[in-house]
Length: 206
Image 1 (cartoon, rainbow, N blue to C red):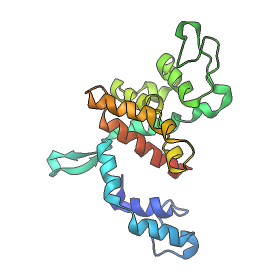
Image 2: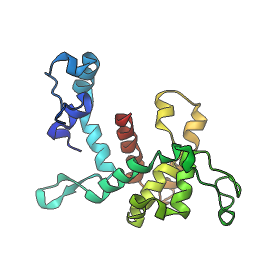
Image 3: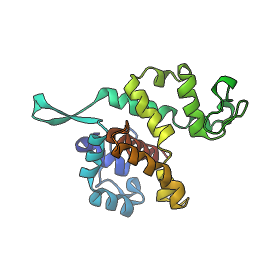
């Protein structure tokens, strides 16, 4: 969200020991592998990154400043929450067991341990949100956004980028979600965009 304040450099080259973005003219050791990083920095369509942030409503135009884009704090909070909780159910000891009153849940029967980390997180969000304070503190609209990206879209961009699954597995549910949007249902562009912003931040963290 700071593309014009060192964001491009930080995303391309990282930061130094003082957490300042590394510049493209830094020593080659700091840029390793320099050729790939410089190529990414010079040829990336940064305006498309910004458009994605606008679509996700992380950046919004401020009418009082002539439409200048400013950060949307509530939406950023949603992204930070998503970043914090999205993979916690990869810790096996945290996986929930479906309670009798909630069964069946996504094809899991009462007494089953939900082994899929996305469905496990979805189960907590649906039935025990108080166990996720950062999620529970969001507004109803923002909770819906988080649940959409984690539990409803069932789309794995990593699988697509790395060709880890056949097209049907990757796109079937996503296509169904897009058809819901065409019919005027609750799916929104802002939530689909948020998923892809989250994927970029997750990729950067990896």
